[in-house]
Amino acid sequence: MRANGRSVAQMVPGETAVISGFISSDLSNRLLEMGFLPGSVVKFNFSAPLGDPICVSIAGYDITIRMDEAAMIAILN
Image (tube, rainbow, N blue to C red):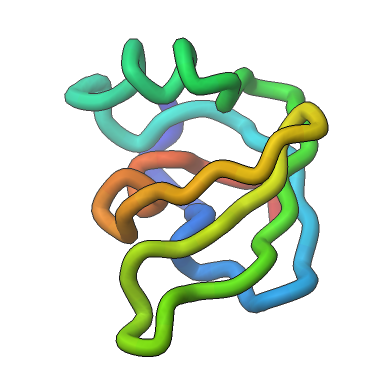
């Protein structure tokens, strides 16, 4: 787990980043099963008109997740 830095929720459309870990262990198993593995490249595609949920690409898949889930995924700056 990583306690500082940025999260996927703070990314902007078109930005890519490398996942460094998880900020909390609450959803980490679920996120790992969805393919959010440390070291993987994640791309922020777009957010819904009201900002939640968001669509990201990882490992060749487009995945829609809620902002509270995205806030748990730490990225390298």
